[in-house]
Amino acid sequence: MTDLRLILASASPARTKLLADAGIAHSVLVSDVDEDAVTARYGVTDPHDTALLLARAKAEAVASLPDAEGALVLGCDSVFELDGEPYGKPYEPEVARQRWQRMSGRHGVLHTGHWLIDCRDVPADAEPGAEEDANDGGTGATLGAVASAAVYFAQLSADEIDAYIATGEPLQVAGSFTIDSLGGAFIEKVDGDPHAVVGLSVSTLRRLLADAEVSITDLWQNPSGL
Image (tube, rainbow, N blue to C red; front, side, top):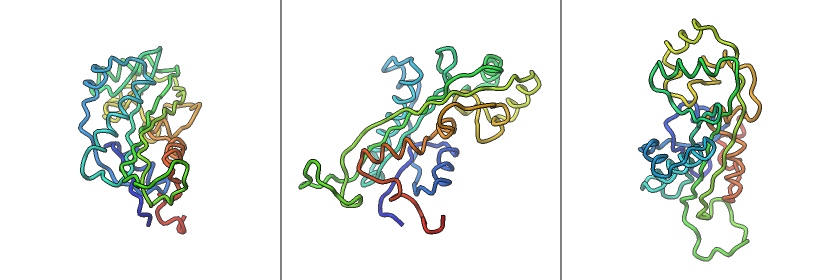
């Protein structure tokens, strides 16, 4: 088992399952970020930028906690874009129903923001460009990226929309749909990284870790058993 610690700053079961399925050791520490307050404060309306802003806010909130000391913290947030408008979590059945009536037979873009903060101690004698073992110390890196994918929806009947909303699944997810559960039946095609639609792009995480001088393979748990 690696000495590196990755903390996922998200309450999403889909994100933690995705990491676990990818063999990435991690723990979960949920932030108390008020998403509406963050977007109102910065006045961000672009869906792409909103996803990155909220991912950063979540990562920074968790990175400030004592439990994050010595760890790598990853914040994620997803925003669905249709006709230039951002769709977060609908919460209310009628909101979800109105969205699905608009999305049916069409396509939009799911943006997932990622923000990584290296909370490990930076060696006092670290020299720029010097190679360090991944466990020797941190880089102080704080960086982010957005993974986006176009999602194409089937033409749904009113009964299908009502049945899906009745399950409660679309009420607590960005865009009012999932791809890895019941909502997957209504998605005909994804153009881009399908993991981004789930809520966390593993390939994007790999790139962010590399920028923090960490190999994603160092976070694999029990790699010999894969």
